[in-house]
Length: 357
Image (tube, rainbow, N blue to C red; front, side, top):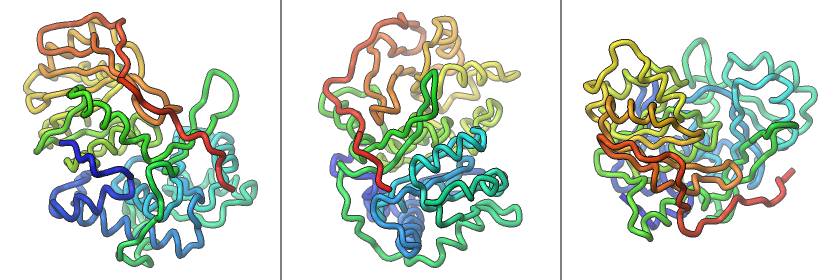
């Protein structure tokens, strides 16, 4: 399913809410959100962000594990013209301080588990004007929902387009502090359009697909994969955090048809006790990347999961997975060479405009 009329992240919820309002958009820990609710709740988030005084281009950070609320906030940012700064919850307080200070974050959503570390550094963050604790009394999202309830669910026009920023993701090299990469909304549609233009089905979506979002959303791979599924209008099962046994259970329980993982995740899944082909009977395609995969691991995946495998590669700086090795596309019973590469035709890099303070 290729919805070429979708050109911005902001437009995704309304597009599917108008066509398939009751179709499930997101599932996390047994909680489900359909596309109508995703549109409505992200409108509330967008209005609440504006009511907090955040202007277009202002940075909004999220520090917490995965949830459906993370994606409501993402779309709320898109609709209000603000820019999401996802923060890796595994970072030290000093690293978190660097990201919040460097980005000029004005509002931070934080799970209570990480609140104390933020409280210790807040005096060092002069730009941080608002702090929203997302959970309350052990109830996931209760604090966020109370904050967002002040916003209207009316439509709002962000006044942004494909070239405007949607996210600022931090990536670190071998030395130094993490660097912020500002990504335009077009970054999340470029590969989709290029594949469609060239008649390639390396990453494809079909009616009835159920996607497992296993890579965390603070990583470009997780955010990119989730937005591909949401753009296609399929059901996206979001893992709060990756655990091999949970991944197998979710694939079986939700009849997952496609997912994206790094090879280390695949190896952990196959190492689960008593796992076998029956656990993956619903899968039709697994997309993998992030590191090389050995021929032995790929062969084990093909033998056990019995579905098509597609290899991709990408960079945070490009805002998307830019290429797919044709030699890495494997079907049942065949292990291809792992070294060849074939770039996706065309493609544009990251939006490198200076951040706004």
